[in-house]
Amino acid sequence: MKTPNKISITEVVLHPIRMRVIQEMAIRTSVTTAELGEALPDVPRTTLYRHVSTLVEHGIARVVSERRVRGSVERTLALDAAELGRHNTREGAAGNALAFLLNRYARFHAYFERSDADTGRDRLFLNGTVMMMDDGEFDRFLIRLRELLVEFSLGPGEGRRPRDISIISSPTDETGK
Image (cartoon, rainbow, N blue to C red; front, side, top):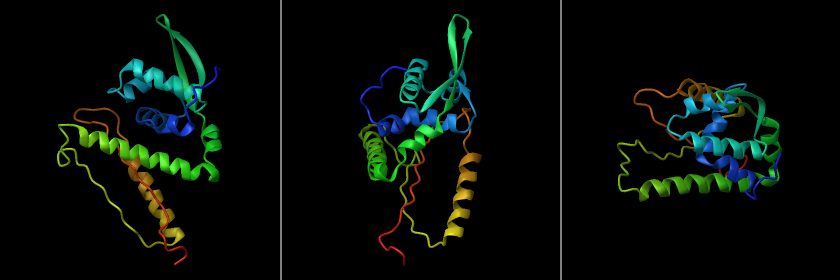
């Protein structure tokens, strides 16, 4: 494996296309590059392969097999959850949260810079809700939220387009009350 470029793991993971690749890999045991191309039809193949290579280079994805297909090599990939977990530390949490929020900000900024930005047409919304729940209720809420996200993780189809949904859970400033 070659030496990775000097970008942080947060930069690797938070790139919008790489996030989508990681999501596809997370719902499958393994996935070929061709299957990723089918799942992300709006991403040009060369762009997709470049981002997959970045994930492999940084250990987020690993190649589990390779086979020759019509003169090229098709790789089968799997997510390396252990490597992702290794970077999910308490020491890095604040930086990861800041990077995530800045990434969201940059995407909103880029959207509003577009001349064709139309929040109604694009169904853009922001919401912040404080909910009163004990840990058991919150766990049930998260299970149902996950079920809903899985139910609507649909593949490409007529009239479908990517929609970026970000969900953040954080403590309020009222600790323990």
